[in-house]
Length: 307
Length: 281
Image (cartoon, rainbow over all chains, first blue to last red; front, side):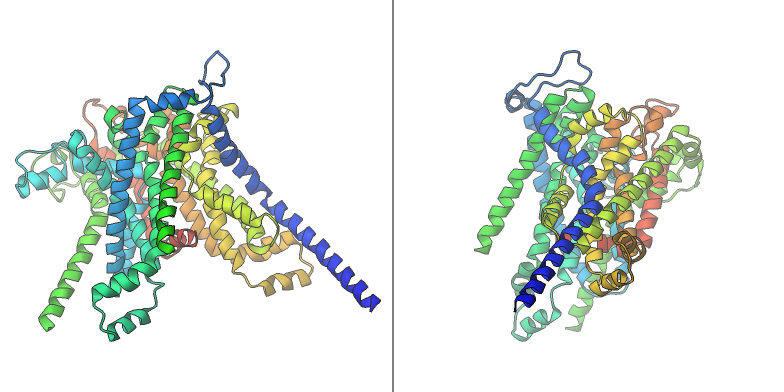
């Protein structure tokens, strides 16, 4: 009896030593990744938060001082910042709604079996693979106020407009012009994500619904939408985060035009062009806060529905 | 009933055709425009097909040293980022996919939250870091900072791949007296090869497409990447007042075609990687 417990203890001890050794090996393999992560992400994140509480300027002779929340107080009265905030949120809401609706439509279309489906799926990757900076240039050429293909079709061929529109210069069409580029570029990603979700839904469910006399609309609202919810949520979160930090489209399309700055282009301008690292870090942190607000709203909405 | 079926199929076919046109038109229009003469580009009504196709714009773009330099820079940055993040990512994924230890889920959460992380939020601190390391206006600054968005994704996808390897393979290797490093290099790495192709492609494309850091950390024209160079096209050409749309479209086609081809050739892998990364999260 005593020998068996002794042996069991010994075995447990050996197992414990082995587990410890395995853990040490695991951490050794993780070390390079942890160092890089700490270096380029965790430290900069904390540093940005700290810098936002100082008046750090790059290349300034004076040492940086801790200024408390005064950068944030200034933000609240900064008209450019508030405009950028409004524009960014507006852009995010419009693009995310359009991309999810359009993405769902495309995913449903591609969920059907038809000849050439894989070719269409391949075509979906074209907008996604093109760098945003480049595709924005391509769209700018199509938007051109004199020689652009859109004006050509609308004015000369269809006669819908009496004179051409300067899509990217006219304040009324500037935001829609940027929205279209973003929707074109990222809807394929949403559609592919939702398509992957659709293909997880067992076909038998639809069969059963049909046998029970459900209409297509009923099958869609009672089966497809509820089962697609996880994929929809992922697409919603991914797209919202991406839209709130939008930089490339606006920077390439509008440059430093004051009425078309997003939070990210404004932060970039202050950090890089003006070298005001303290205030720019406060803008960066504000982007983080805006994103956090959206995530809290999503969690609240989706959890309430769950209970 | 039959007529309705036909109408339905016609509507479906039209929707598919419309979708494909919508997806490829902007690239197609850039392609067509890049072969037009200036006279044709700037004439109304626009022609949908070049009457006198010309390679003049391509010739000019390829004679532009700044552009060629930018293409080389992009290749250097994108491949170095991809290699570094595959190397570091595979090591980390081996630990996370094959070992159970305290702190494992914390590490996974940190990595997952990094994939959602806005780059602009660390721009200020990275700007200072790059300056402090003496990397401002030097390409390694981009290799280093691009890891912010390539590494988490690489680790996440490769961990999934290595988790799926049956435990018997690992046990057999240990029976044969293999060390953890040998197990990793000789057995796990080859098994994760398909995942490495997927994540490598996605890293390369993400690095190739990046603009914000390239714009912020590089200053002189010889350090620009293609996304930055494409913006400064007007400055390098003869007439300062007219945007050289033909050359811009030719340059756009040149920097885009390799990516589009990669995406088409590896479409299954890329779609799997894109959706796996997201669906698991």
